[in-house]
Image (tube, rainbow, N blue to C red; front, side, top):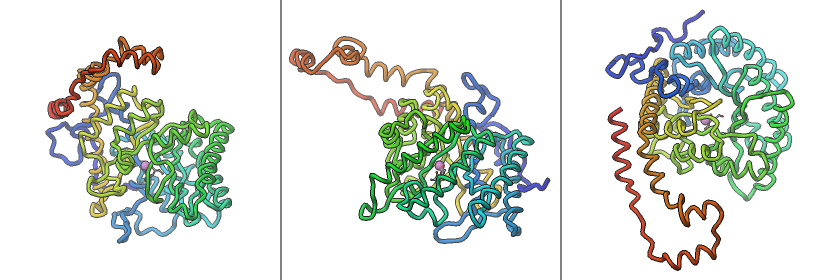
Length: 439
Ligand code: XUL
Ligand code: CO
């Protein structure tokens, strides 16, 4: 078989002193951390769109990335070459999972019927390669935002024909995900949102969005798709107001329409920061609501207000992310999907490997740090101490539902000189540094 990434070796763990760029310094797949290997904790996943399909184009210029199929013209030959390259890429990095949109893996035909037939052909080839390379599908999804037909949205379009087309596309994408044994199916509301209320029926769009999700749930049940449905929040981009703003908004939406038991969250770092949150906040919000599904791994640029999708190298964020994941008891059916791309100027194909190595090493070290933080329990003990007033006396009455405004008034009248303790944030941040520096 053709080698697409010539000159890039299999990436091995060489330890933190290694100067070899094509080696892991911190990610040691078989090392056991707590109850499982690093590989099982992290479930690293290759995103097909950024890694294989993208060419580095941006709003101001054409693609720059080197691709081995640049001289091919037949779309089917290109689709198959990309698929082979994807499996070689995963093999060389020791990545077991991948994720894709329908349109990443196969080109569109002249109409929906032909598009579905092309997709079936590529999916059959994908299935073969999954078996021979021992790979798994973390999730599939439908790209219902790129084609001009989705100019006003997909399930929230003002045009019912577009709603129908999107339904047909998502139906097919769920079938294909099932065919490939996908562990999850993602809904990212690509253009589900609006630009101005001057032309938008907000109520109808929200209702239709919920109707669409209900139909997806019913169809999955009908065909016996056992994967977890995930919603991926994002506050803006491409639309000004995306409906799935953040985890809290999505939870409220799902509960409002009685859909909450069918969906968990696919949380993305850069989407969290666009919403004015930290990644840790979003993951914690999902965790406490039993809704942590999977993670899209990347980081934004603190100086830029858009979705830059960079490979994560920030060790603070990685440690605090993994802290939440461990507190959740792991990520279950989910994984850590690199929804990340190399910069347009990093156009050599080996740059892709270097990006993944940087990200995988950062998350691996984040996992070690988080594990130690939980093992030593300093932060957890501090939190327990900080809220101790709710474990006894009047606090316990509040928690147990035995207090009301009248009993609390009598209590407050007798205890009106309250005494507070310091929150000690600076001490805790210095302690966090200690865990990071010493690991
Ligand atoms: C877009 C984004 C998507 C989803 C899948 O910002 O993150 O790639 O992850 O549609
Ligand atoms: Co994403």
